[in-house]
Image 1 (cartoon, chains in turn blue, yellow):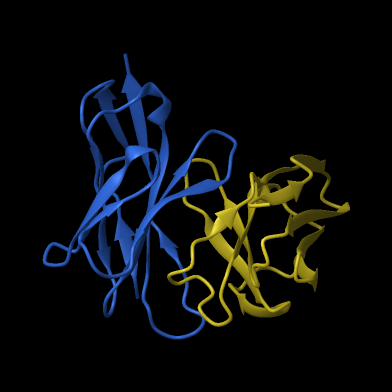
Image 2 (image 1 turned 90 degrees about the horizontal axis):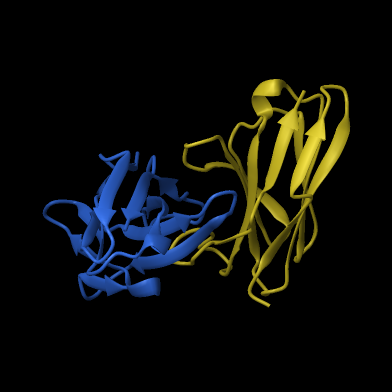
Length: 115
Length: 117
């Protein structure tokens, strides 16, 4: 079975500082990995994904994530946080096998960026 | 059009009512999904439709009945719900004939917030 762990319920960072939201995964085979963001009372919005290739993936709004196979991690990063980045962030994983396999979400990490 | 539109945004219903949630997309996506999300929790997959056929039912109680009338529309019919069914119901869609939720990105609607009294 595949799983995702987001060890931090909340991450606090000052505006202008770098941010990291952690994610580790467990899946059979090579993973498809995703980050989504959810603003209050909204659906999830896609940020970025890793399928294959370069371990550093760049996404929307200046976010990037680094795939580390040996550590089974896919941490989300941004060099300089904005107050508007405050939201709930979900990491997700899927095994690239079969025709009906599912996306498994982590429990989410709330990012709070303050002035 | 790159959106998934869900109606209504809010719904309050009694346990004996029958209501429906609606979802629409015009991106040509051939896979559509219903997720349930409780407060401060991740979305939980309920149903997946591919080419208008139900392909995944995550052991959802029969009081939830999905319907996919055509490739652009997805409904969730609600009947005899319980208060614990109160949640945000999210519709999503993705491309792909076979790879329903693989490398293809899910596009989510804003959700329908359901309250069961």
